Image (cartoon, rainbow, N blue to C red; front, side):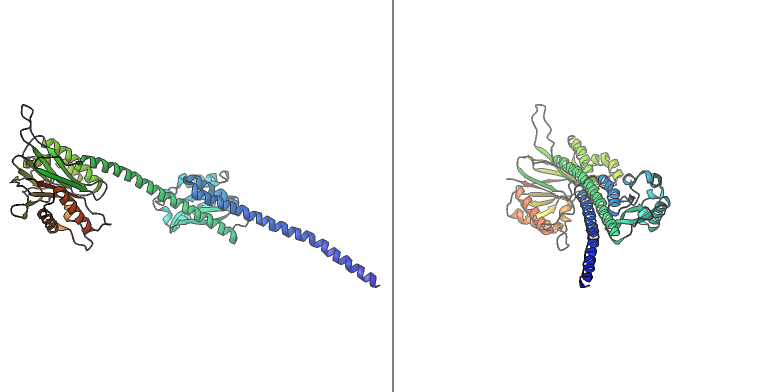
Amino acid sequence: MTNNSVIPHQNNISSNHSLSIPASKSLNDLLESLSQEQTCNQDLLLSLSFALRNFTNLHRFLELIPLLTTRLVGAEGALLIPFQDDGTIWRDQLQVIPFEHCQELFRQLVVLEEGMKIGFCFQDNNICLLDELVNRYLRDSKVCSTSIVSRGRQRGRLYIFAKKDVVLESNIQRKYIQLVADLTGVAIENDVIFQVIRNHEKVDRQLSIGGEIQAQLLPDHCPVIEGVELAALCRPAFQVGGDYYDFMSICPESFSGEKESDRWAFVIGDVMGKGVPAGLLMTMLRGMLRAEVMSDLSPNQILYDLNQLALEDLTQSHRFVTLFYSDFDSGSRILRFANAAHNPPLLWSSQTQSISRLDSPGLLIGLQSDAQYGCGQITLQPDDIVLYYTDGVTEALGLSGERFDETRLETFLADFAKAGFGAQEILDKLFKRLDGFVGVDHQLEDDASMVVLKVNH
């Protein structure tokens, strides 16, 4: 009897063990299936992040979004509606799969007039309008949606849809959908930044070319004139500036072909404003002035003619020009000059050991058609120094908020003149003092130009 009781007990153990084998196998299969699904989803996300790092074409990246999203969450299809930087629907970048199922919805989004209005996506009621439109055309499906946001700004809307008996809103699925939406927002934001950078690069290239052209228009070296030293430098605040200086020979020739005297025109000017417009106007005035100089007229007559020629163009551009024109005869050392409201050059007199200003009455170039200009004249003496400059020098702001001003400029010029420095040394030291006043790491707010003329023994 004991044997009979033992035998059935052994049979029960054997039977339970045989039943546990299929259950264990099913659990292992399930775990393996989940592991494979998890690996697959990780690969999909890695592919998306790889595309984000390496794709320079936004369209190619956005094409992947609906496909990857549907595979991640097991949906039937997905719709991506990106927005442009101005808030309108980005019709060229609309993405949907399967297209056949959403063809009419796609067409309605393309022709949606409201979506073409600036700032469309920035209003909550318009986002609701999109949601209603999508739900109306996908009424037979379960729809899940989320916004694509980057730096607090709406960049798009992502919709995922599936059959109504399919689960779409589990915690894991929502995380996957939001992760895809966030990566999409980064991609769109990167493209916006890239476009801005590319536009800036185009402008920089144009400015660089403009700056090179303007630099070529300024004298690349000072002429060698008997009896005087010259040094000059223009430092624009931007790549293209409105300051201008020039040296032009105005020596008439005799019938024998020989020059009667060594005569030169020295000119410095400033277009009100900075950047490309000022640079273009100054380039135009340079051509006009060079044509006038060849006429060998007096300085005041040259400024009068220049004003007549440039008045219409300057009036249309709403800009004016200050200009100081002078001509110098190296034989007699006579300097004649006329001033169109420019900063009067500073004259250091070696005889009186003092500074005075070279000035004559005159209005801005481009201000009025009947402007008249006076003419001054002075005979320079050995060791006299003339400093031509623009207001970018005296108006420069220092670290304390003060301006460089004329008094400071006069003081430095007097110190360097008394020390017996040459023209180039004086110019270098004046700019060094200006840089120290403004701050080595600070940019000048306006174009700054100086020309130094020193009379030799």
